[in-house]
Each structure stands twice: as structure tokens, then as C-alpha cells.
Image (cartoon, rainbow, N blue to C red):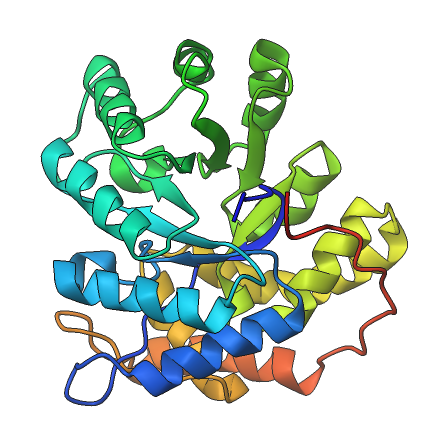
Length: 309
């Protein structure tokens, strides 16, 4: 499938059983839930997907499962988060053979690469696949910044078609547009900057709280794109306390608690992560409970964003 890089692409959690084994039936059910809610692509194996806790074999198993569930309805995007360039290249080769439609490529993990090293890593991954690629920029979490100037330099590689912009600086979207025009599709990657980013020109949203609230996320995207601002603002104001949970270091814990409380998942994670407890759990649960108790009726929306190129 040729990926149409726009719309809501959930950064999906990886489902585990109590013994920390992959919970395949739970993931199959959750992929289907997201598709039925109207998302435009599935993003697997990102930070929210606990990529670093998974074996190479498990990663490929999850890709095959998502491809089977999607069955060509929407694209399956695999996150690439490896410690060496060689491993990243090997991963994309295997993932493509297992049906991944595209990739979201992070900088090298653990080592903090400089600009030259980062670009060389990204270019090597692109040369290892015929699939299109979203570059993931998250200097807050990974201390590596893919700057607008670097994106301009990388523009000669046609497989780089999109960017997940998670610098926590909404001004970056305009800076990138001013320097590179419409060369890249830009996705906001910070949940509580979603509406601001979409209104100033972001093409899509790689979302986190969508895991627990898929219909609200899809509705907000379409309301923003259709410039139904009063409705979008009302929904966003309800949603924002939840969306703040995506911007915390414990976003995996918080979003999995939201999934559990919304009845679409469990809190099961792989150690060293442990379920929340005490005051921290109570405060996060209170935010989620308040949102669930005040969940608004969703307006009628026209699902105009296509899912195929």
C-alpha cells in the first residue's frame, strides 16, 4: 500500500499478559478498535509501544499481526528505534518483508549522535528499504534535534516524505514550512499541542491518548481540518487534561492506565516499569475519571481524509 501521510496515526501500546508475554488477542482487538474509530494509519513499536523491551522476533510478530488485522484498509507503520545503524537497516528489511507499509525512524538509541551522524543514520536506513519514511524528531526525549536546516539537507532523499515533530515547540512547524515548503508532510507528535499544530498547517497527528480515546481523537482532527473552530475548541478543552498525560516521562504508565479505565486495555507493562501506586496513581486516575464522567457527545463529522494514495 502507498501510504497517504495525513490524518490520525495512533502510536499504539504493546499489549502484555500478566507474565509479560505478548498478548496477541488483546492487540488484535485493539488494532480493530482503532480502525473502526476511523484512524488513518497504525504506528507500531514506538516509545509508547515499549520498543526497547521487545526482542527482534517479537517486533516482527507484532508487525505481521497488524498487517493481518488491517488487511489493506489502512497503512501499517513500524517504528525504528535501534542502537546501531546496522540493526536499524536489518530491521527495516525484515519489516518490509513482513508487510510494513512505511517506517517512523528515530535517531540512534542510547548514543546521542551529532548532526552529521544523525543524518548518516537516517540516510542509511532509507537506502535499506523501498518504503517511505517519517523522520521522528524528539529532542526533548532523545537529546538529538533534527533541525529545519537538516531537513532541508535530507530533502534530496525521496523516501523521506514525512516528519513527526515532537520538539515541544509549535513554532517549528512554520520554520520547517518556510525553509522546505511542502516538501514534507508534518505530523504533530505532542498530544497537548495538537489543535494548535493542526490549525497552523500540520498534516497529521501521531497521537498517544488515542489509544484510550480513539473516536474523540479522530473527531478533533477532522473538526480542526474542517475549521469548525468552536466545536474543536470545546472538544479540545475537555480533552486537554488527558492530553497532558502524553507529555510526562511516565506517559506509558499513564496512557495504559487510561486504556484500563476506559475499558480498552490493561496496565500490564514490561519491567522495569511497574503499575502506578499511591498518590501518583490517585492523581492520574482522578484526571481520567473526570474525563470519563464528562465525556462529551461527539459532533457529526465528515470523514474527508483519505486513507490510501
